[in-house]
Amino acid sequence: MTDLVIRLENLSKRFSQDRPAIFEGVDLELRRGEYLAIMGESGVGKSTLLNLLAGLDAPDSGRVVLEGVDLSTLDDDATTLLRRRAVGFVFQAFHVLPYLSVEQNVALPLDLLGVAEPERRRRTQEMLTAVGIEALAQRHTKELSGGELQRVAIARALVHRPRLVLADEPTGNLDTRSAAQTLALLRTQVKANAGAGILITHSRAAAETADRIVVLDARGLHSWDSPA
Image 1: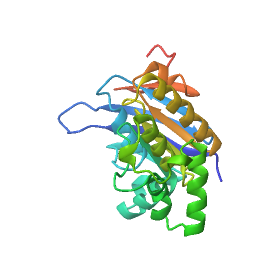
Image 2 (image 1 turned 60 degrees about the vertical axis):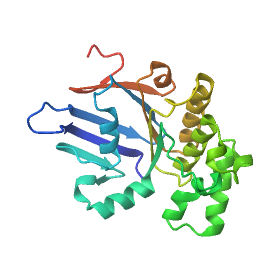
Image 3 (image 1 turned 45 degrees about the vertical axis):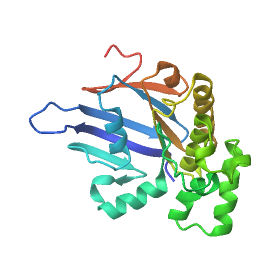
Image 4 (image 1 turned 90 degrees about the vertical axis):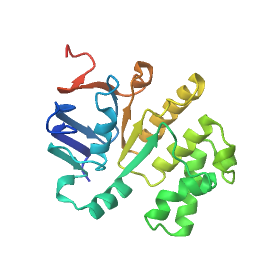
């Protein structure tokens, strides 16, 4: 198994042909164990880039290679299967299912992958313990605080041991204390699961929890300390 998790090659994206590109010339390599923060002004295309990384959208030019597979060579079903196995998502709005318990929410990726019940239960319990919410397993998500909901979201994103974890402004709906705890937990769990992580954020404080920071603008990705 190669250490290279994802490679972006000269990506560009525009919403229409009569408008300038949102961004172009985006190149990136991310390896197992790396945790990267991508910063940028509002509207520069951070969430759009995340959608390209996950195969939820296609670039106008360039390539996204995930686990050695060029996403442009896959049909929709194959892309969905690869994303389901290899990618975990943590969203600002949590996106937990209110009619399921905490345990059922966390187990959902394993259900979708067809993991057998004994193994599914074991891995779910391990992940609930890892993020400190094992006591909440049978609670419904409508009973939880924002910080607890984000822990559920992190556990769900990591329970199937994805190679790539994508976090899109995961602390935007949290108070300062919960945000700091969430960022520390996210970094720790990405490292513990031997995957790679990308944190999309506009917050310098959040970005500084990553191993390195890059900035997205219309001309691509630049190191934080680059003059660009």
